[in-house]
Length: 218
Image (cartoon, rainbow, N blue to C red; front, side, top):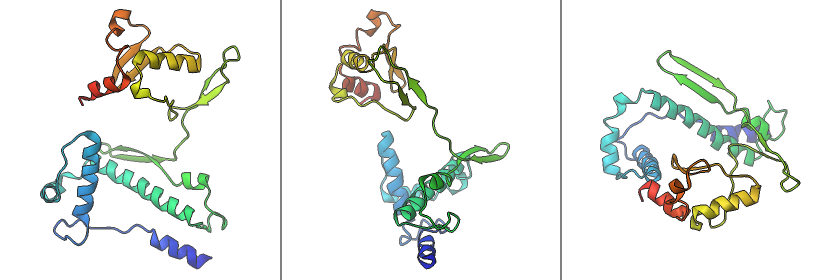
């Protein structure tokens, strides 16, 4: 009923917080330490303990009014929507705006925004997200059915990292009945059908996992 909806809305309402690094009970430094170390681990950056995080955090307050900070804030708003709307939808939240019906995926999607930011103008414009562009892989001689894909789709190859690059190219060509013209990894071209055979002689026999490790410096 309405009382339940109001309790759910209140439970997931955002609360403004004033950053205070010297109050160990508020969890601010603990959160920053955890979040920054997750990012550091993802990007191969040295991690920092809680004490170092607290020292650094106390020196960056004058520098946070930047485009980076604004982008982080805008992303945080969208993440908050994602967590809140997902939890409410899972709890069967009914909205009066939605005619008392459970929140649909389309209704939830309409709550999100793309943001375009330029602090030099200054300009902040928001728009509703649009679906990705669709492309059609046409059928060839009845061997492959017409297939629709987007840039968010991916092709999964079993034992992909354990395959030589030449075998990966062969498997892709056999699966899709197309010529693979280009493969890249980490911003570097590792295969191109236009390259002379001599230029491919180093990469083609190597395992894909070995190539990835070499390009990443690991």
